[in-house]
Image (cartoon, rainbow, N blue to C red; front, side, top):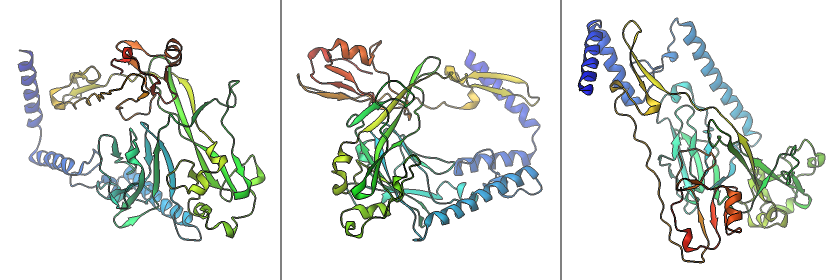
Length: 423
């Protein structure tokens, strides 16, 4: 009975609204709906399919927005030209990614406001490590293209994502990214801020004098908080990077004011740093073996810093339906799973990722969270309703079971009693 009444109310509301519309208004709405479906435009788009700020007419506000967007575009072109330097070439970037976390690649091509509004104006390609063939990036629930700035974000990183990524605008491509994905549980050390009394602290940059290269730690941003309304955890990761002394800016150490690379080192792999001016991660698949296996590089660990956080929970999202006079005639609390008929069918919740693991008694296994909601927030493990606290489970199992700083469960010696549902 309630469902029938709701339908009647919606239909009556539509009829009342339609009485006040002219034929032109109806046709305009249909055109808007068509172009939104075809081009994915938002409310700032004219019903014919273009951004209304591109043809501002006499609208002063649109003129201001129009001018700012094009000024930003021309500024990008100037910065791009300046970055090419004397050699007229862009600098590629080598980066490191940790399994199960995310990474973001900015499109380095300057995109005009006209091209930014076109979905297919920018295309991403990549070359997997195992092949030499450039192919289009396949977008999935974990590989996303930003509609705002065309940046590529990859969540839930895996070894298979290792490779070269490049952004194209038409036939114009910019400098590529070389991504290497590693197991973050290996060769990593938890460190504390220099202001903390706890040790160890982040390792300082180190100069390898005989090769004129520095080893330093490249830090990420802090992750999202693991929970809201209560105290949670955040972390940031830092990976070992090798960079030429000619390009390293170390304000606390003047020893980087040294000679350029010797010509007799041109065949040892060090000439690669004249191309990768921002450095190359110590564990990158493109770093030459002659550098990767130097004692100083081998002994340098990646680092992770863990902190505490507390953030407020998001307010409820309430959808409101108003009549022609602005009066609210219907509300629906979307946060509680309640939707208005006008909103249509709500999106389906993502599937729960499951992974079945078999292990023989006495084996060593590592459990990783099989999926995420496209977030780098720390993971909280549970067995049924029991929360697994790293310090307690390590003590109770006499260090047989540990939870690593990268939130992986490591069972060093599997027992039959370990069989359970971990979530």
